[in-house]
Image 1 (cartoon, rainbow over the protein chains, first blue to last red):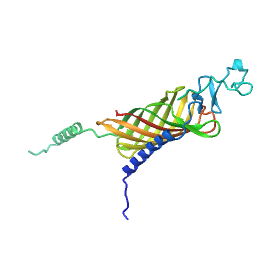
Image 2: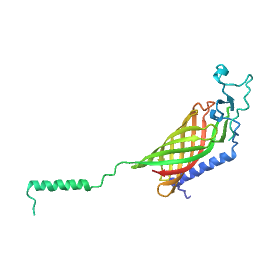
Image 3: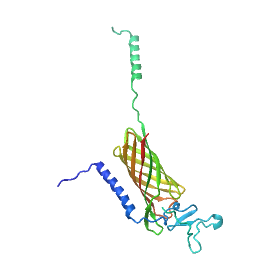
Image 4: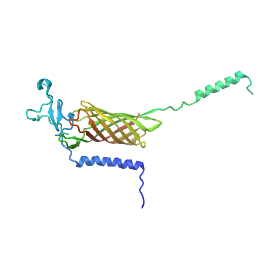
Length: 86
Length: 175
């Protein structure tokens, strides 16, 4: 049986193409979440933090009496603090 | 005519030596080769959705600029530095230091450290490949797929790492 020999350059090109295809596949097929979920604190507007995938407003020290996060009495989240959609 | 006198011999030797010194071409010293890059990229960003599950979304747009330093006697090895900005949502500024290994003049791979420094911090490691499509002798278009894992920083709301699968493209110029 004839063996196939690939040059190092051909291997690198193949890996490069595979990488591009992988990214295209992920972009096209995996269920990317919408902009409604935050993954990073900088997904949220200024003076807000990302908690449990949702942006919550950070209270100022004067108004919050030392508390840093405003989740409301029952943990309700300020609806105006949604992450910016992509 | 023979040169018998000592002073005459000495003067001929000295003048020949001086002539050799001034006419000789300077030795080729070890030099530094610089390449500048400017590119734009995006891709996928993965992270903890806050429910313990890992999710993906489109990564923010990255604008990157930087330089590669190579020794002209060992052009396969390079040290690269990048500065990048994410220009969507709250803009961030970060940097990258990488070791590059060029398999040929146009194909290379790299690994290094990456981080975002403001307004929040993120730090991790990165690896990727470079393919340069030359335009003329000194310029080229670079294509760069990369993978980065950033497990540390104040930008992370949970303990899970943030992952970037990015594809960047731009201009590469020999300086």
